[in-house]
Length: 111
Image 1 (cartoon, rainbow, N blue to C red):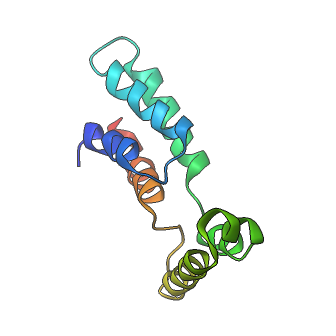
Image 2 (tube, rainbow, N blue to C red; image 1 turned 180 degrees about the horizontal axis):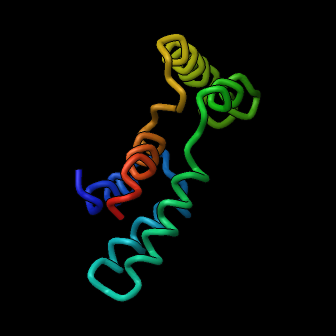
């Protein structure tokens, strides 16, 4: 996966926060310019800030807030899924935003 594809994955992820999406777009806009290195540093830092450890994901989906945001049934499904992937060894959430963040973190030397 190229750095462009990784940044685009952030933009395309419905679960990525606006700041992460903005950092990804800024990186894409900066490719080939003098600002590319700085934009890449910001994108990697944002990925590290936004990736959710699986324990945090589990804790969140057990809250009343998650039930209010997603509805009780969806929150329960997401909680069960998070517990399942943790049992299988997951360290981070596997939503599209976190998957994109992990790819960026794991490949930060390419940026």
